[in-house]
Amino acid sequence: FALSLQTMTRVQLVEHIRQKQSYLCVGLDSDITKLPKHLQSHPDAVFEFNKAIIDATLDHCVAYKINTAFYESLGLKGWEAMEKTLHYIPATHFTIADAKRGDIGNTSSQYAKTFFEVLPFDAITVAPYMGEDSIRPFLEYENKWTIVLGL
Image (cartoon, rainbow, N blue to C red; front, side):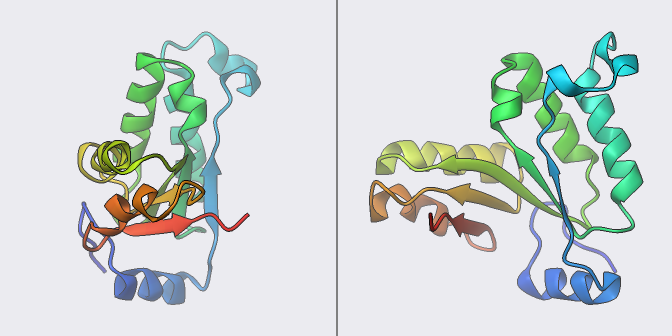
């Protein structure tokens, strides 16, 4: 069972769910203030924590959801931890950028590029509250998933 590093298709995701008999998605909302004490002094504490969570859950889940706010709030170091975490997740697992983006069209285009090209997530969460042009740029990516918030 091999999956593309860049994109997981619907068929591949469904097959992975069937093989594992699981829909489990593990959230990596890694709050640096709540990490275990033994990691607090580690120079790359968030990534080390995520790595341990991924290693412990890999056989039980089909997806990982990275809440970008917990990484963005740490500046460059947080973005680096997010990127390292994303690349640590095996291609056999679906990846979601829980970014809740939704801005005017040209800004959304840049967000889409960030989370689908620069950081090769399979999916992103978006907020449709500013209208169709706020989500259209995400929908234009072939074989990428856009999860539109309903409430």
